[in-house]
Image 1: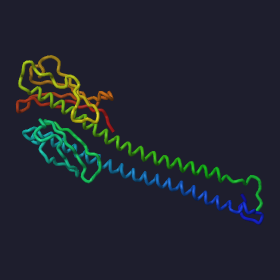
Image 2 (image 1 turned 30 degrees about the horizontal axis):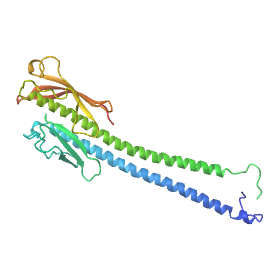
Image 3 (image 1 turned 45 degrees about the vertical axis):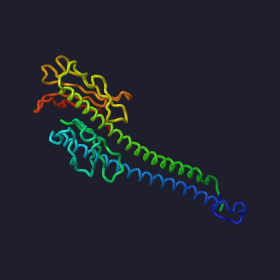
Image 4 (image 1 turned 120 degrees about the horizontal axis):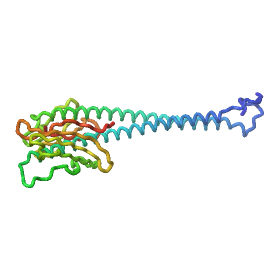
Length: 128
Length: 158
C-alpha cells in the first residue's frame, strides 16, 4: 500500500487506510481489554491466595495453641470435655462441636478466623 | 512515492505475531490464576484432611484407653479397632483406623502393666495411609491406663 496519498489514488483506495486503522485499533483494543481483564483477575486471585495463606497460618497457629492447651490434664473438666474458652494468639474463635457432657475425653472443635470467609478448620483433641 | 522491490511490509505477520504473543500471555496469566486458586482450595482441603487423620488416630487411642480401663467382664468385649473402624467425626472422606494389639500376654500387655499398640489411619477408598503411630498405654497417677505416643509418622502434605 502506498505510504502517502497522491493524486493517483482512486476513490476505492481512498478509505482503505482508515478502515485498516480502525480494524487495527479494534483488534488492539480487544486484545488489550482481554489482557487487562486477565491481569485484574490475576491480581484478584493473588489477593485471594494471600488471604487464604494468612488464614491458613492463623488457623494452624491457633490449632497448635489448642493442642498445647489440651495436652495439660488440668485443661479438661470432669466430664472429659476441654475447658473453654481456650486461649489462642490469633483472632480465631474456638467453638466446641461435640455436645457438652458427651466428650468422654475426645472432643471436636471448630476454629473460625474472625472476619474472614476462609473455611473453618475442624480439629479433634484427646484428653491425655 | 515510488515503491521499489523488497520494500513489502510485514505488517500482517507482525500483527499476527503480536496478537499470538498477547493471547499466549493472557492465557498464561489466566491459567496461573486458575492454578493458584485451585491449589489454595486443594491445600485447605488437604490441611483439613491432615487434621482429621490426626483426630481419627486420637479417637481410636481414646477408644482403646476406655476399653483397657473398663471393668473386667467375661467374656471381654471385642477390642476397638481390631478391624478397621470408620472415624465418625469426619465424613468428607472415608477414614478408617486399625490398631494392632500387642502379641502375647493379656490385652494390657505382658504382666498387665503396659501395652503398646500400633494405630494406622487409612483412606480405604483412595488406598492411602495417612499416619502410623505407636502408643504405649501405661498407668498414670490415677491408676488408669493412659495412652502415651511413642512415635507419630504422618504422610507428608502440602
